Length: 236
Image (tube, rainbow, N blue to C red; front, side):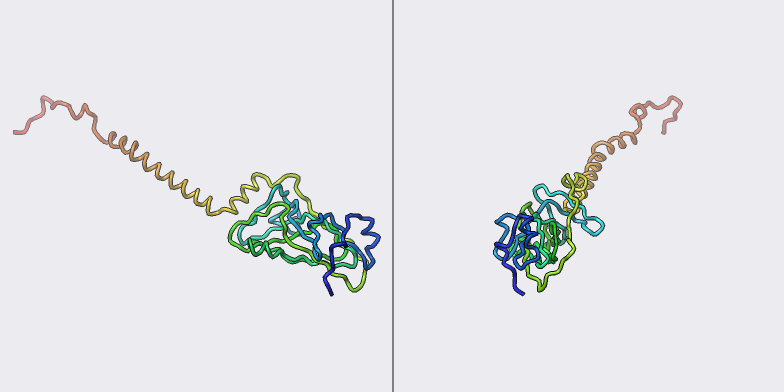
C-alpha cells in the first residue's frame, strides 16, 4: 500500500468532492491553503481552540487568540485549523512534525483519519521538556498522509466538532493556569512576603514596642524624686 500523492487531489468544491467520492480518482475536501498542501501530505497547524482537560464528557475548547502555553511534561488538545473531509476509499494517518520535536521538544501523537471523516482534527500534543513551550496560532503541528483502501464501502459520516468559547480563557482561569505553570515563582513570592512581614514585625518591635515596654516598666519620675517622710527614721 503506497502513500497517496496529495497535490492535485484536493478540492474546495463540495460538488467535485461528491461527484468523485466513490471513484479511484476521489478527492480530499479541505479549506487548507496551497502552502499547506505538499506533494504527499497535508500540513496541519494550530487552529482556533485548545483544552487542557479534554475528554469524552468535556469537549469544550478555549479560544486561541494569539497562542497558548504547554507547561513542562504536560499535554493539551489543540484543534487543527484545517477542515478535512475524507472520501469513502481513503484512509489517513497523522504524523508529528520532526522539526517541532527536535527544536522545541513538542510531539504530536499519531492518529488515524478514517474514511468519511468530516471536520477538524483534534490533536493531542505533548511537551517532552521540563520548560514551558508557547505555540502560536497558525504554527505547523504535523502532517496527515493518505492511503487508498483496497475496496470502497459506504461509511457513515464521522462528524467531528467542538464547542469553542466565544471568548478566550477567563481571567480567573488564566490566573489559575499561570499559578500551575509557575509554581516556583508564586511559592517564592509567598515566602518573600512571609519573610518581609516577619522582618517588619521585628523592626517594629525593636524600634517602638521595646521602647514603650521599657518606659512602662520604669517608676514615675515623681516617685524617683520624692523626699523622705519626716517620720522616716534615718539610719545611724
